Amino acid sequence: MFSRQQRVVFWAERALLCIAVLYLCVHTLPKAWRTLNTDFPNYYMAARLVHEGYDTSRMYEWTWMQREKDHLGVDRRVVGLLPITPFSTLAVWPIAGLNPLTAKRVWIVFNLLLLIPLAWMLRRMTGLSYSRIVLVFALSFPLYRNLEYGQFYILLMTMIVAACWCWLRGWQVAAGALVVVAAGC
Image 1 (cartoon, rainbow, N blue to C red):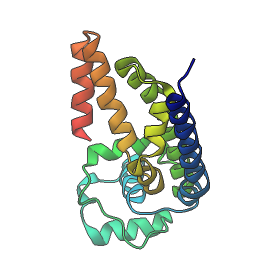
Image 2: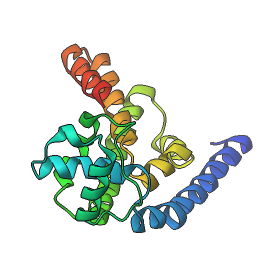
Image 3: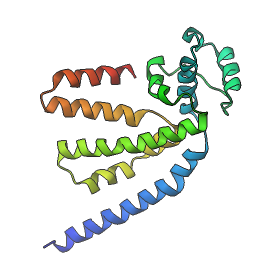
């Protein structure tokens, strides 16, 4: 039987989890779903240009990039690749054929689905309950920004955690390959 203190902690965690998930569902996801902002258009533009066979050597030319952005109908004032490596944009390549907002929506769903294996690996490595792992996810401000801005850090974190998981199971080659890909991003 639970002590009084354990029951209070249990219900406080559940209440906090409900509030955080409600905030995610009511505030962050609708905002992310309807807008192209900051990072995703940058990844999308580079992946789309590669997808369509453009010369990648011109992707760091601002004027050319803005002109191509206008031709593709990306609704952002400025798109650029300065802080981004071309390799990191390849994660978006499979959805680059879609229109920009649809591609971002697919990317959001993909990122949310990545949280499932991420939670599973964390549970296996740490022994924490799923409710506590989800609570950590739900209270993560970077998670909200990743979804809102269409960033690739959930994918990156999944690769790093998967590398750790592989290493702990003695699969050094798989762990090394995951670290190499993550570092390239």
